[in-house]
Amino acid sequence: MHKLGWGGWGTVWLVKDHLLNRYAAMKFLVAESSFNNQEIRLLDRLSNRPSEHPRQNHIVHLWDHFQHRGPNGIHSCLILGLLGPSVAFQAGRFKGSRLPAKLAWEACKQTAKALEYIHLIDVAHGGLLPILL
Image (tube, rainbow, N blue to C red; front, side, top):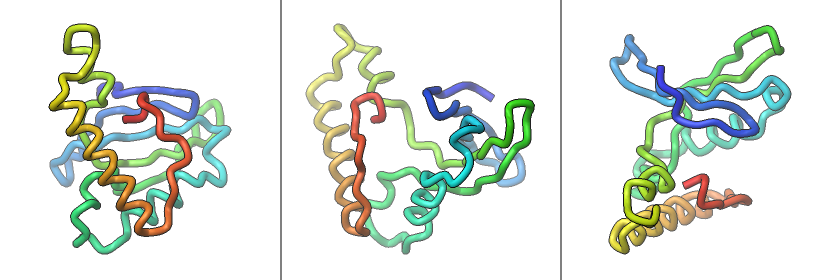
């Protein structure tokens, strides 16, 4: 496993599913946020839509979820499809930590497509921050 990121609500790890021979992201939520978690319900709703919409490939998909009992309580664990490196990671590879115009345009275009898709199914994103891209 490799740590992909962390924040106030949990830690995300790169994991490999040996049964299905694929990589995934496992989000391990802090115990306090694991009960009545809206993120699981929302990701489940987004992931169980008909897949023929062309914008659906711009959102993360919830493949599975389970609970883990640890010394600090019960943690929700989400198994998510991998999307790719974050904008912040990509920008850090360039001078001044800024994306070149073509890459910045592509990131904005993909974000707009993802927002268009979730708005089509009556979901609003309430916290679009650069750190989340």
